[in-house]
Length: 196
Image 1 (cartoon, helix red, strand yellow):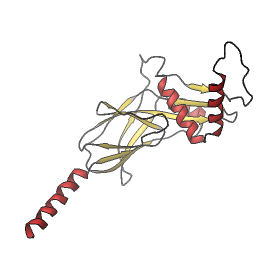
Image 2 (cartoon, helix red, strand yellow; image 1 turned 90 degrees about the vertical axis):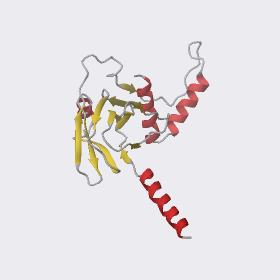
Image 3 (spheres, helix red, strand yellow; image 1 turned 180 degrees about the vertical axis):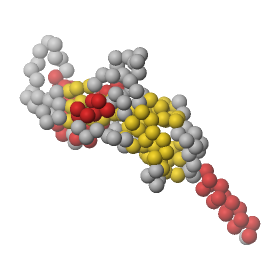
Image 4 (cartoon, helix red, strand yellow; image 1 turned 30 degrees about the horizontal axis):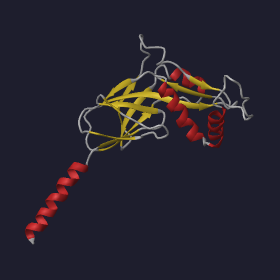
């Protein structure tokens, strides 16, 4: 009986050390592209905001990625070039990425995307490291493109030889009109990611 209790205690201790990990969260405005040179995959309408890393020093490739809806119902997705945050030695626990001096409006965000500042904080809100992104001098035109869409007309499009997929387009328009702001934002961010 005593051996079983000791074996169970040992199993619990071993399992807790395996479960303990470095957990990092990020807001929607920070897109994590890769962790330790391993690409992070996300789906069309789902954005992964929580990541598990190994203890020690890590490399987190990120980009600033912000969605703006204007008064005229047009949308802009602003994104920076990808840059890497080199973490200090991290121990098991919770950490989070955050924008430093985050812009409050679209005009400020257009400037901010050129040199975003992202910080890594521990669970006590202590800043551990910050990294300033810079515009790559040899970046491709796709890295700096801003995706802009204009308001979708609610009237039914006219059918012509050049516009064969009217039903599909109309279904997309209706889906867009029924979508929440958050769903529209995720869709626009997905479109922006496809253009890179």
